[in-house]
Amino acid sequence: MGFRLPRAQLFLVLFLFLPLSACDSGSAGGRDAGRSVAPSARPTAGVPPPRIPSAPGLPGWSHSLGFAADGSGFALLAQCTDARCEQGVAVLDRGARRWRPAESPLPDVTGDDGITVGLTVLGPGRAVIIGQSEQWPRPAPTWFTRDNGRSWTRGSTDPEGRTATVPEGALLTEECLELESDLNSCARNRLLVVLPDTGELRVLKRQPPLKGILAPAGDGARDALFVSGLDASGRPALAKSEDRGRTWKVARLTEPGKGGWGLRVVAAGPDRLFAAQPGRLPEEEGGKNGLRAIHTSTDGGLTWNRVWAYRKGVEPLSILGDPVTAADGGVTVYGESGVWHSTDGARTFRSTGGTRGPAGSVTRTPLGWLWTDSYGNGQYRISADGVRWHGFTVGEGVG
Image: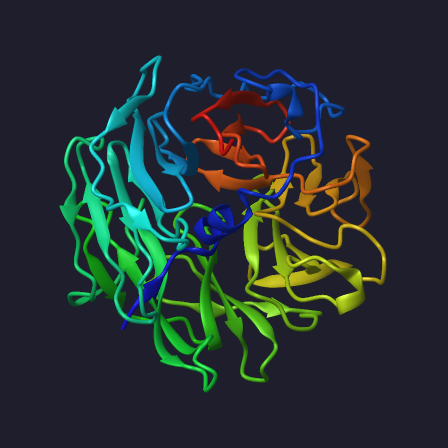
């Protein structure tokens, strides 16, 4: 059976070509950094952002950018014509002032298939590339490096044995076991672990006690993991593990809301968590990445209260990536119609930046929050606290 790219990786592949219209003037580096959308109206006190060098001369457009906690990083690059895409890898070594091209294990893509691979950083010098199966859900190819991209090992496509835990730095991903009758979606899956030291696949021995499609939902605290699915009544639910996957508890959502594509959990300081619940909205709202609800927890994720719910025409109506929880107490949602900021714990939001349009996406990395533009120009921003941002560029962009 095959396994699928993490949802964050798939988002980056699918939305790099959306036009970027939001802008911001915060501190940034690299080409066209002024088009970034990281909010500048909030207080600047906080932790200085990591300083990532720009590399606008690298060939092609970059995607699947990721970092380790020591500041090293990887990026996938693609140079595409109407008939072919050449795929490459760039590496930022620890403490280096420049990105460098690295050995690439990826074959060229012919025709109009586009780029469907994703890269995940597993730790300093270590990364895994997961391809896309030509006949999903058949196994997809994987490649692993432990030496900063100087060499790659072809990984196994099927899991080899089981693991009781999800080691620090490991990737928790999904394997489809059974397709729906229309053959276009998964009816039943399980969680796999990509080991951080070898890139090998293992089945997680104890699966979360949830129904429906299981989806990794984040790691809001040290040694804590969250997985999204359905409870016994068929409503959206979260399961939490406090021992890296050895045991699980089903969390209680006081108002789970309707539908959704899997909740995403982020931390907001030591005592509070937020969970965004994406999902399909009524057709008249438009957009493809609807936001159904936002929940919050003050007991480590065992119980959740809904603080925001979809209302007709009330923004934010969509979410791209994860909600950003900042050191100043704010919560920011990047959506298809701009950037939306809350100062009251995600109960109400206001527009920032004064423009409407796809606002890029933000995901959490071991180095901090990483913002990616929506147009494929290789523009990024990074922040340690969600308040102060540093901009940089990787790659030439799509055109």
